[in-house]
Picture (cartoon, rainbow, N blue to C red):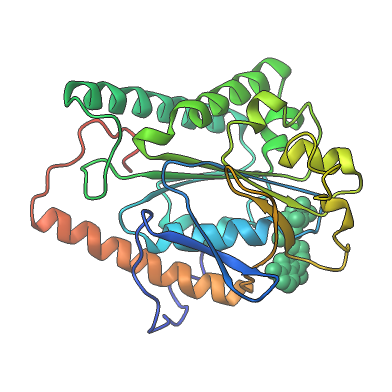
Length: 291
Ligand SMILES: Nc1ncnc2c1ncn2[C@@H]1O[C@H](COP(=O)(O)OP(=O)(O)OP(=O)(O)O)[C@@H](O)[C@H]1O
């Protein structure tokens, strides 16, 4: 557990958000805010080391943490990229492939149970204020779990479970945001890439790496993350479903800011939990990710 959150001063003007709200990611070339709705969507973030992928993940983590209607599941092989949000999360997975697999398996059960429930209710997707809280899954360095650590069979298990969550989780509020510094076809096969409605390509060293993230043919049409300067941290090409990639710069939060927001979010979440308990709100029976 983080040790700094308890002592950190709490900011006074941090809003309470909803995961159903648009998520602020940064600004575009003309300085206008770039916002996306993550609910019912997934996001792929990829590019060379140092481009700013973790910073974008942190911006999204902040929105998720401040959304009391959203649960967080964090996967971070390095532990320090998302570690500040641990107190806000239901699950924090560090460099532990067995725990990573157990967690995605539980999420798969949650997903299946939620679909069973929706089918029974004759509905197609969850809605705001449902008993089912959306679950935001953030994975920093997908390749760590799918291509680096442990044995091949376990890595493949993890990869196929994540693929299933990405493919089927959207309607039941399971949102996957996955980042990798390895934009290669073994880590991001086309069949997986195409499941991500949002794709953020940070600096790449080749046009083909950029195409692996954004989709085949974008480099030929002039949209390539290969042209992003290595010193332009946070700059990326963001593709939202149906559109063309847009150059944007992600918001930037230093460690102290993340710590303060996380401390505030943890307090807000604890208060919201107490409020729910006091009101004897029925616990979502099908939600196996509950702490
Ligand atoms: N939006 C931004 N504005 C300004 N600087 C940024 C921004 N995003 C990132 N940086 C700078 O770039 C550095 C690297 O960012 P970050 O760790 O997010 O990159 P990364 O792509 O996740 O790297 P890695 O793949 O090695 O984990 C940060 O420490 C920060 O100094």
